[in-house]
Image (tube, rainbow, N blue to C red; front, side, top):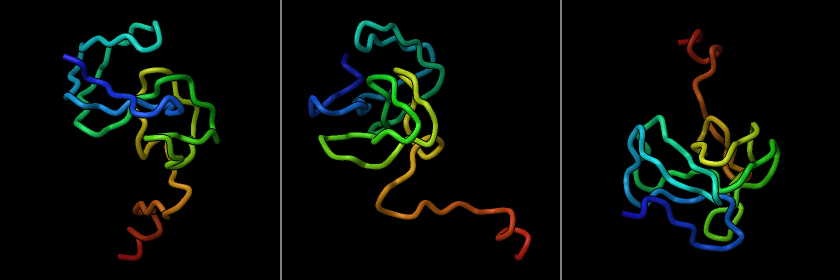
Length: 99
């Protein structure tokens, strides 16, 4: 059963449309990817190499920028993506210490 979906030809990510589990295998642009983690519906996987600072395109629209280089098949999420539109809030050490 197909696990990845690419809506727009401009997209540089696939969207998970059926849960991916460790050791699942998919071929992305001729590259065999063996996943090492569970990825739930709606999560993103790089369709091609993405350079740091490059726009992440999903459904034909930029949703943010890569904060690190991302390899084909790698999970694209808050650990390597920053929204260009909304602030990404995390608990900083300063915030935690002030509590």
